[in-house]
Length: 202
Figure 1: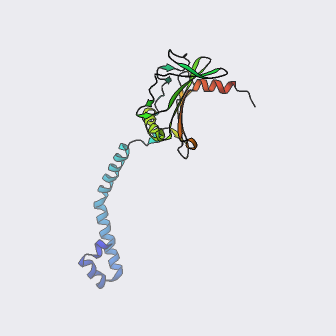
Figure 2: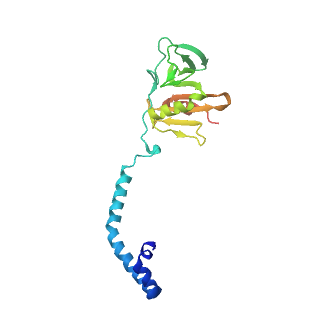
């Protein structure tokens, strides 16, 4: 409206012929200008549609990548390798360490790596680290495996392969604020399912 009122002839018409005539003049000018701008609007909508198609996917829509079935060359279901030593035993499960393990994942420093063997077959790997490494390790693993499922307070992240086949894996990274540490547990989904099915029903 300011565009029309700013023109001298419109102001003169307003005083001479009154509000009704001014309204008719305004409607006529608006219709003409609208007809001129309509092709531009159509082109703008087409450009907007093109831009929408070109937008990158949101993080939650990114494709998940498979987790390595095992850890550092030892696959799920395989026996201990040479050089490993037992640090703890509990019924049918033994926990072993490998002195030659690099205490880093990517550029993130970790405190320890323990391998869990059930019936002498690798079923899980437990990795402890200082709490200061929680966020860097989260970023590193997201780059390796894609975005995780996270708790509301983002203190726990879960990556999981689909299914429970022999090579399917699950990884859970959780920080323990009470003792200033974090833990990454990588496990075989098949072993998890087997343990769950063997538990006595309450």
